[in-house]
Length: 482
Ligand code: NAD
Image (cartoon, rainbow, N blue to C red):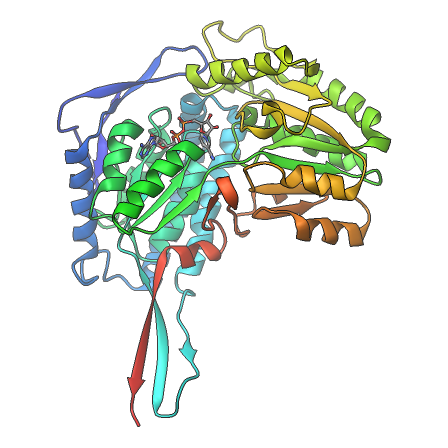
């Protein structure tokens, strides 16, 4: 199978005629050949987006009213729901994720479009009190052409939360999916055309990050960049944006802690602690990859975690087990190397899950791994592994828990498990991160809940209404009328 770019509501072959191989993580075979985008292809997509907007927002997309954009987004949400199974199958094959996870992603995608469809005509400026004789007002205008660089772990969900908000706010989008997982986003661009989005409002250019991704972030026609991915690449993107004074939102992952206090409801906490790292085989930016457990319940929690980890199974997406394979060979080898390095450092592996016998030996299957008594300063407790590896860390006091929880370069999400209301708020206020969950983790995805990081986890907010502000520029108009 070969796939071209999707630009201005049409399939467009790569200007060089070159295609890249994208692999099926469940067996290591080539799944699809993707157009290998370059600067020419990127420019074509940016010009299409500019035309859709028009010089002064007078193009076929730029001149639509908020309610017209809202109606198109509602239609896209309905189309996603109608094609949910097809999209989930594409995503599961492409990313290697369990089909049940991919189905949840398709549902979330429809919900993002629905949410932003409903928000499009409620996004407005203000009138400001000012000196006598003046009326001052603000307008929320789109940036113009927005670039969206999407990783391979949750292509549909990340597309929903960034592109959904950008379109609702009136921007025209150029999307660069990951070379490992582009299929669902190409299909979405096609669906957008089918429901009536004007040509150029939404364009997808595939290719390598170092080529098409880099060309997109460097393109002078891009007015805003939204990047989700690794801290290292995020830094490159931020540099490219700085060269052109281009605003940028970075969502760069984390090393998120869940703090389990002595008084926690363990029955409620245990499945959530496990799911927060097993979900998508740990390839989740907000994965709960550190469990900080208070000394009084440490051995009990550990024993419960051990039995749950030993039961975790990885296998082909269609079997709908706990986990599928990791996305590619590089990721697979990286995770294995980090696990081996931790063991070589003397960190104790307390439990390991298993791989289903039907899994191909050529697939990138990694068992879930549980490490105990992990020193907070060790690599396994500091670095983003992006695999199903949980570091369990004991602590004695609340102060110590806060120090360990905040003691990494990252700051994306934290979980707190305690029945003590005062402690819940005290600790939540001290967390240096973008989201805190008390007696839950992730709140079931939370399309409505602003999401993003501090420190090396990035900056800017996605999801919820807050994302819409990020995709607009505020213009102030002061009228002197005496
Ligand atoms: P990456 O950051 O390199 O890739 C993410 C996206 O950026 C892809 O679409 C890629 O094509 C693009 N890209 C790569 N180089 C680029 C460049 N120079 N300019 C513009 N775009 C570029 O991530 P990766 O190599 O796929 O994975 C490496 C690590 O990143 C993982 O092991 C994991 O730790 C982390 N990661 C985090 C997230 C997240 O959601 N925060 C997602 C994926 C990967």
